[in-house]
Image (cartoon, rainbow, N blue to C red; front, side):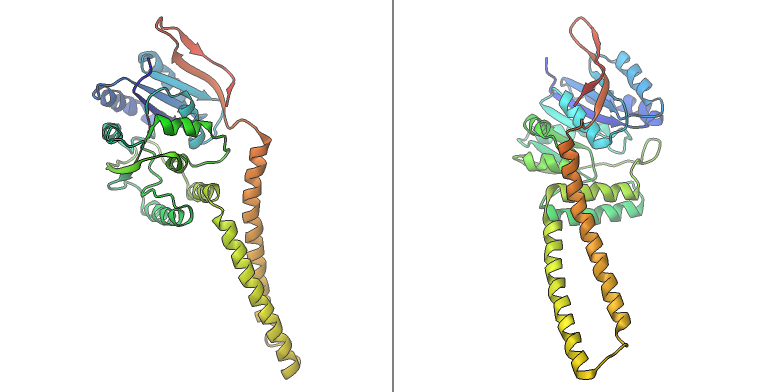
Length: 324
């Protein structure tokens, strides 16, 4: 029978905190009094995470499924693989680091039952370093202005999705995407709730400053052509200004004769314009690179094995080399 709830948890080098996650997650879901399944997606962990997940599957095979990647493909690819395997009417994503308490899942489900098909979450008091809070706030503001996707706290992975949204996400074949934003565009009735936030149970964040910038750049270029359009407009304005400057210099040459005082100003303008051109080439290259990745048609990830209870007789399946 299909469970009412599916919980998708990407795992990457979380050996130190998995035992605590298991100890809190299963009791929290058991208290809900509904049928559920938990899908752990091991994203090529280099520690003992895969072994611990396999042990947990053997301990609770009735509600546990484990998807094992053959390498590291990133958090969003792990979530997409989990979406493909889910069977529940409601799907909740949760990080393995316990910064989002599993006990909050019940609040998301209660909100979904009010008729919403997408429930995002806003961290009440973020337990992160100051630079991450400020960077996240700035990226949220920029993203909303460029894409018109309204998510108060885009970096929080604790979210609930209706089956209709999950089915639409599964139909997409984008190589690079940002799942919360993609799901938001498909939702008929989205909303947000406030949830608690805790310090990491163990380990350290897998996102560096560069990774956060890269993620938000993917989000902006993946959901809007505005950066290209803005650069085109900027180029037009610079062309008119450059033309006006050229005319002014010619007039000045005829009126005042040869001058050398402005040569360094011209160098500065030249370097500025070259910087703008290089930035534009990089921006165009970003979009062209996305097209290149898409037309190659390579699998977004490779599943090495899936651990699950196959039927009512307790048969366990291990599917190797499954590709998506």
